[in-house]
Image 1 (cartoon, helix red, strand yellow):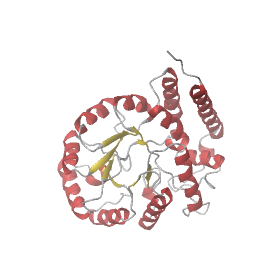
Image 2: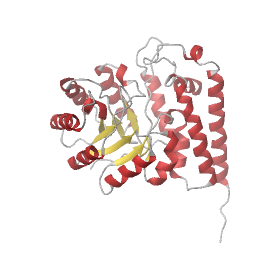
Image 3: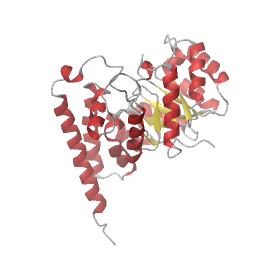
Image 4: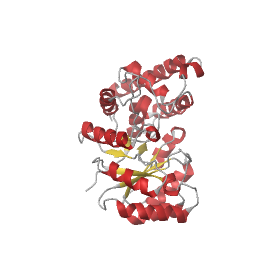
Length: 315
């Protein structure tokens, strides 16, 4: 029986050394940090992992490492689905399937690389499903790169009909679409998890089973608390802060998140492959932005701790 994948699901960074190699000691510390933050699952080898800039050998090795180090404490899902041709996609997905993750996540734009429509999507999906182990749980990811390819309702139903998909990382960034998809998937085994911070709170209240966005690399614990907390004034205030804090993504993510983790002692380097410029030179006062971001998060942590310790009224 496959494990359910829901809740707060960090989109994992890939740490690199200053020389540009995968930094596995830092990756081990990062896994521990996610789990200490209350992560319910881990999403490895995704866009935040810079998967488009990793070799197939690196993608497979990182996936196996995360599965091994997670040690069954939480489910691990992996993607690494980046290639153009079906032949190359078949090879890479078989490699990723061998990592032992709880689900293998297919990228929707790879199922329609030329953006030709539903017929192309269904053809590629059918071809890949024939090559993957029939008992392997699958996911869907509307990855924004190289282009955002949203599922149509017809395509979502076709995926549901296979009975093989257990999670959709929704990147519609639209609450009405999330609600419609939740209605379509009702009664199925498919969990729909929103990835957009701007609608994270309303999407959770509508039935989205958690959050799977880039801000999980900054303050996953705050999203974990919001996911589980009752609908209070403090939760609503926190949601507003999280929306504003998520705007920091525009200032050199994922390097911005790596600076945060370098400060925390999680990562040794802020090196990225997807960024080929000095983020501090391009984004003036970047460290001051990060100061405010971390201070704001700590303030909410203190308020949450105070609320937890406050005695409950008795009847």
